[in-house]
Image (cartoon, rainbow, N blue to C red; front, side, top):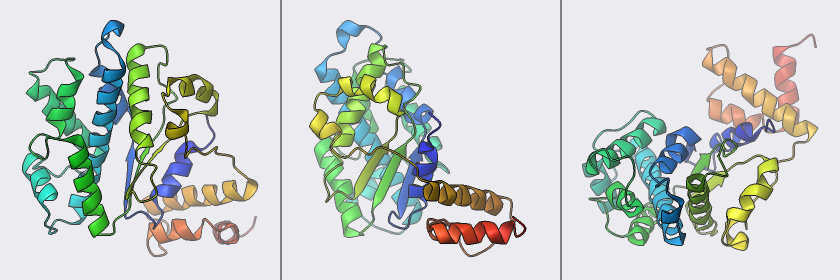
Length: 273
């Protein structure tokens, strides 16, 4: 905790490498997914986890479609048209969109708090596709044909109640889904953070450590990293207060990733230090 995981993700969000960068807070997706799982541990099994994995995949691809549609309103594609027909309102934020997905699910199951988990997968992509693999491939094709790399970041699992079987199933499904996005030819990437002290608790949830954690990284900051990160955060604050104008905030964030630029930035802001 307190290692700067959010700062690391926000730096990636500002990167030019990803035209679509989506930041999801746990309360916007994880907690709501847990709420859909039966509290009865006897009803949670590997089939449940596999279905939850499908749901995470569908949710991630829906988020990618939502953000793509916001930036490319005139682009025509069958999957995109189907998405527009089903999700007619363009939400201002990804949190609002995820709330809309949950409202759609609740309406379809008459407000029931829990039920067959498979229902939420079917309802979430209803009208767009009837098959998870087909739906996933159609979104990948859309991103590929427009050469649009997308990254989805989830911060963070540190408050997960690891002893609750529903949380365990949701985490297992999340890991299984995220593992499918590790292939180098994928245009959609998933980044999930957790405190290092939780790793030894959570890695036991994985059914395939080699696959689920094949692309993991340990966040260790060096002095230059912290200098750049603090400069990026302070620049973001100054932009938000209209106190700094040097082109776009994204270009400024990229520039400040270089240590010498970060030093020059602070010297220009605090010339007497």
